[in-house]
Image (cartoon, rainbow, N blue to C red; front, side):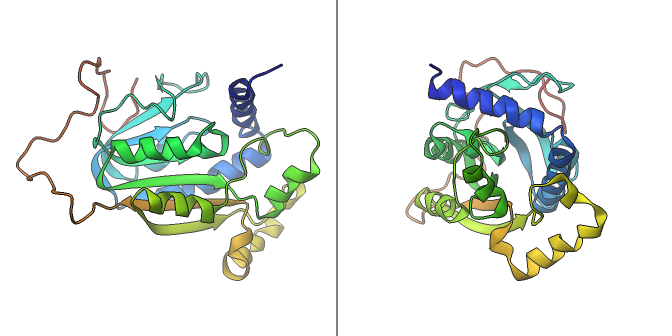
Length: 255
């Protein structure tokens, strides 16, 4: 009998394969465009993506953050580079070292999503941004999960609503900045024809809460009672003390 961890690992593999299907490619394109808009005015030293089910490097090129790093627990055979191996709840990064963190469906398949968020809070700098993409269970896409006997991708993950996610972020000291809803077409290949493009615009305007995917951006706030480091002190290292720092090129993920 498979363990929960093995089940989730298999679900991630299935999701990666699903993103290669015609519908999956359409979904990835919508997500990339949304992330690109959300980070185009961001700046800093490090942008970290946790999980490589889909490739956001094209969107990253439009940000002003210097270095882009990808961390992934399972191997990513289709990537041209080799992302660092890491568990989402145990990131091999120094505290307060990351300017922006992207979790693309990472929480959908995490064994302990709250622990992943606590780890994100640990590594983000004050005023750092976290961007989270998740499937909306309160949508035709989410309802499809209940109709299927076998939880094949993309319906094999957690049922995490955006409201619960925002509550968790609030408890960790994050403040919601933006929440977008995407994918108002039903989960059918025939629904992705150009003649139904009007559904996206109509859904955004008239029934946004029923989008199949939500994208959340929140900022890490610092309590006024917490003293800030003087600006002239050196920025902390990206990797924890004693770790071997991989070779990185500015503007690209670690190779």
